[in-house]
Image (cartoon, rainbow, N blue to C red; front, side, top):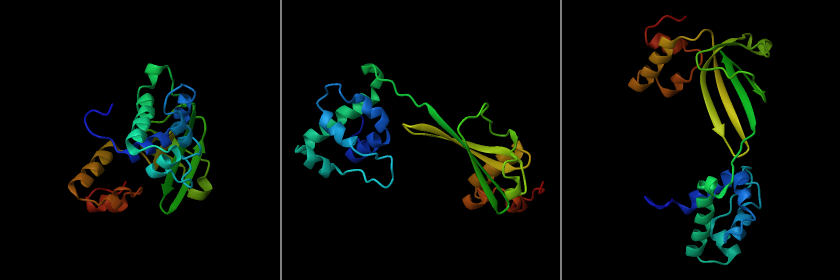
Amino acid sequence: METQRRISTKDIILDIASMQNFAKKLIGKGRDYEELLLLLMAEDYGDPDIPIPSVSQLQDQLKVNYTTFRKLLMGIYNDLYNHEQINIDFNIEKVEYIFSMSYFDRDAEVTLNELPVLPRVGEEITLPFFKAKLDFDWFHVRSIHHYISDRKQVVFIRLHPLRYNLYWHIRKDEALVKGEISSDDYYDHMDTKNKQKLGLPMW
């Protein structure tokens, strides 16, 4: 795996810490990195309040030099990378859908654990759950972002008010690339100022 460039030891530790649930499946396989692996699994490093141990701390606990430590670490990393070759499956069974919406200066967010149909960019949605808070319930999907962890898939669905306009979507992206609007303006969900700047009608 380590052929074209030397991968940072610190970055490897961060990668392994980001997929502890997968790495746990390597325990008990009789590999020479077992002791190091158990150290890396000792805490839930997915918790931002728990600091990931440094290279020197791990070396001290194992009582090995850096060369040996890196060899053991690369053993874990390579087995994770080639997990199918050693008959280990990586499965993510939990999913969350987070709808984030704004209307003028009012914001709301809805988290769902199941969704029969995933809406696509441009599709329109009536979401009445927090109409009293927003004073609005008619949106379209502006963007979808999937965040994958070793525990779950989180689907962030950003909603903008009113009807989707493909021309405006493209024109707004073009305006950002050309420097006609700033990145702050780009994320303005109402787009009133942006359309004024570009000489377009407000609707």
